[in-house]
Amino acid sequence: MPAVLRIIRRRKDERLLNPFNLRQGAVRSRGATQLYWVGYIAAAGRLFLQGSVPTLVLTVDRRDTDHVTTMIDDLCTGHPTCEWCESSRDGLQAYVRDRELAQMLAEWGAPGADPSEGSVPVALIPSSLLSHFVRGYLEGGRGMPPFGRRHVPLSHAAVRHIALEGPKEFLAGLNAALSKHAGTSVGDIRARRNGLAVLTYRGRAAARIVQFAYRGAERSLPRTASLRHPEEPSRSRNGAGSSTR
Image 1 (cartoon, one colour):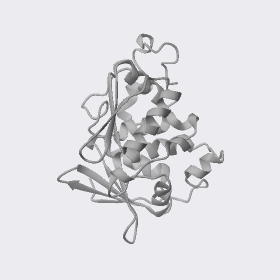
Image 2: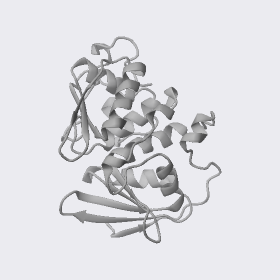
Image 3: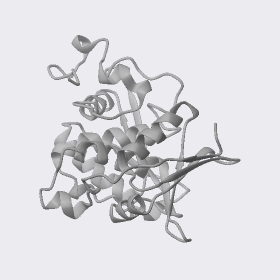
């Protein structure tokens, strides 16, 4: 793997959407993809605005390095760079530098040096895009079930445990949004010693959230293909609509 990857991108016609754009109804064709990445980055990244060039630091599973390149292709303009480093504490990390991306992420409340202070305004995400944000947050949660383990479940119904880590206020908003739009029971939120909290769903509630998150999936980790196209949709306890197509 090269130490530094320089990627040249042509300017895109569509600018990255901030919460105000979405609030005003400017949901363009790329809104679903961008909201997926906002969720992924909120779970896996930290944004550092100090220094000559703002930097997004992502903690990445070694199986998902190509996914970072996909993110850059989807979101970055101009001449972004991506540097890979090995952290003794956090493992493999990607350092992505792009000014417009950093500005958009700051407007979305991406976590900074202190992850407990970053909070994406879930209430501003249109209900039509919420599933994409949730899918990104699930997949970015390295070390947390269901994707922090070696094998990805083969169906929605096989997911029996979901744990989402983040600021307590953010998780409370996400919990309420999922209860309303995913039709699931309220999850359990508990504080952790690191200043963050964990939102947990078990049993049918966990399976229902995964079904909701992968409905109409336009962007996701390649290794979650079994959830985009479940092998056993007829066995889902959630009834009709278990297919993500």
